Image (tube, rainbow, N blue to C red; front, side, top):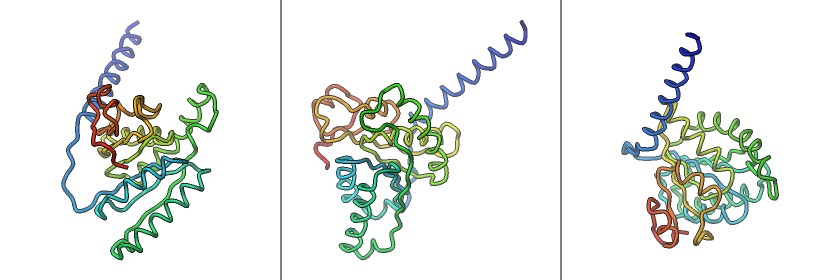
Amino acid sequence: MVCVVILAAAAGAVAVFLILRIWVVLRSRDVTPRESLSILVVAGSGGHTTEILRLLGSLSNAYSPRHYVIADTDEMSANKINCFELDRADRDPSNMYTKYYIHRIPRSREVQQSWPSTVFTTLHSMWLSFPLIHRVKPDLVLCNGPGTCVPICVSALLLGILGIKKVIIVYVESICRVETLSMSGKILFHLSDYFIVQWPALKEKYPKSVYLGRIV
């Protein structure tokens, strides 16, 4: 009986510690000023990659090196990213020496995949995402809705919970989302440091979000 009580107390203490760590990480938004910020960008098939690259085009060279994460079967996004970086270097010679990297992880969910099975594929993706995030240790994660961003953002959050590094998570909801959030948005609304929407209707529904008008 005594062993059960001790184990229950220990489990309770661990749970309280984890809750406090999550609360501290989510509440902390302090960023030390620096000349450059390592950024990790999650790209997705279709319009997600187009939108995120438009947003990146307005960012300065201070956001470097740039790490891109795409699904392992997403060749279209890889081509778009390479074209974007080459065009950026052609327009501004100072970008020629800015490093960028493309990383691949398994998809969290395939098109028309059943939702119950998505749980297992997402866990598999997260299992491979955390070593990547731990290796890169970005200062900032930027994403806009592809399913791949969920395991990446959860892994970035874990870095802070484990006391390794606080990673700022910025989520920009797709311009296509006028009145409702995407599934990724509904999940990451509670985990991101800054949640940006592009329509006033979403700002009204989610007062904690940041409305900057159309940014892509």
